[in-house]
Amino acid sequence: MSDTPETAPANIAAANIGSQNDIAYNNRLVQEQGQDALVASVVAPIIEQMGFRLVRARMYDHNGLIMQIMVEKPDGTMSVGECEEVSKALSPVLDIEDPVPSAYNLEVSSPGIDRPLVRESDFVTWAGHTAKVETDYLVNGRKRFRGQLVKVDDKTLHMRRDNAAAGEEKDVEIPLNAVAAANLVLTDDLIREALKRDKALRAANGMDNDDTSADA
Image (cartoon, rainbow, N blue to C red; front, side, top):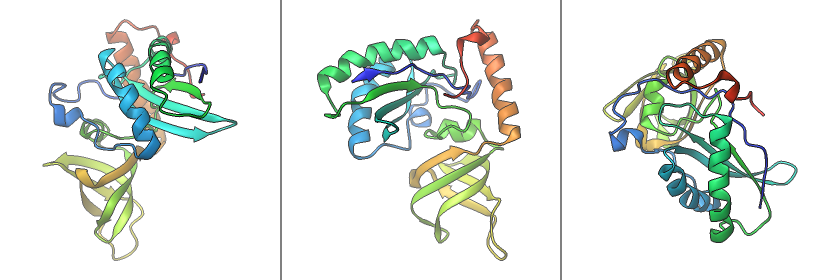
């Protein structure tokens, strides 16, 4: 394993997103499978001990094998320095546990503006914005949805589809436990909102705006 430069793409999740003590509200709904799940099981406890949250662990090939670990603080901010701290803490543990036998580069980053949505709190935080959602099983005869996140109510995600065909229902209710994957769609409104939230959070936390970088 070798380390690559950490990135903190302007991620930027929510200011107050409800009770941070509600375990179900903040637990990840979307879980990794296969080798990614093994990696997540190794890194998640370390990340949590440091006061951060795992967003996603993923192995992918890009001019060599990459172990991508997406991480954030509970308030959604994440600086380059904090990414470096997490990387340094994970490296020796990964060397010992060896969840991936092949050579790879470790990449620790924040989720980015068009971030994965993995917790109930993520869907609440970004209500009003456009997302893509994939389910484990058919919901209203389909497994893929794109549209506005309306609200979360009684463990159910309410969406208003923006690509519904004539005669199809625009409004759909998706059980949260059916969500297999979800991410925000990059729009001008999302960029403005994300940057506004990030600036407010960094000011509240006394963080320098130079302590983050654009997407790598």
